Image (tube, rainbow, N blue to C red; front, side, top):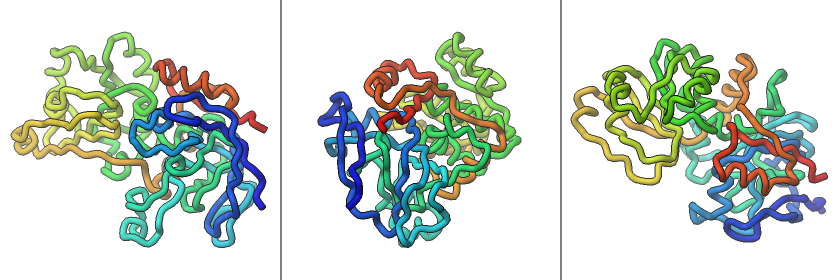
Length: 339
């Protein structure tokens, strides 16, 4: 019989997390059990906590940016050994048999399992997942700060790989927050010419320190007009409704506006600028296991880590309030002190 797992769970929508214990049952033949060392907090944890997406089951244990060590392996697991330091992100399983899985696009599997949807996540002493989605961490990676790479990091890294962004491209990032600050770091290291769209001049120095070569104030009509036909690629990391046609105008011919932010309302665009400039709009989720491995290696090679704040896991409600108030700079990591 498996030993109980100690966790922190919300009993209902929007309620504070409290101590919670559960018995996970027998380890599946393709499952890995991870002793959690730390876990990042993501806005998706807040959305699930509040049941914003209508799919949260309570009691709810958040946490999908896990760093830890492998302590148990199912009999059909591969590439992992007991004691390996690993990471686990949003996905915790996929079917392995559909066209998407067989072509290496497991992140697009229609039957993919999410770490905190219908199951218990990483705000706990241990967490389980299918071995495919448990990423070995390269030697030299800053594991203390690495948790947010497994969700926010791969979210912004994935389109760089999938869309074939070139080091010679002129790119821009909308939103310099939990996602956007990592996008700036990745794109700068990728070799691109990087512009940050900011909402105020006060954020200019911060954006430049994070990797932008220059900034544009997105509330300054004159600056936006001067940026017309400037970018091969614009990445939106915000969840806000924006003047999308302005950003389409800022693209070069064949340019692409890509969103990883969950914009709340439909995106309305004029057809003629898209047609005449052969421009496109697209979106993407997190990356596949293979792309996640690439991101971790790239981060290690270039010394890239999220800008993080730390809280003990036992102070999770304080950390969640800090994030909810928009005070996080830029990601929060919980250090496990649950025992």
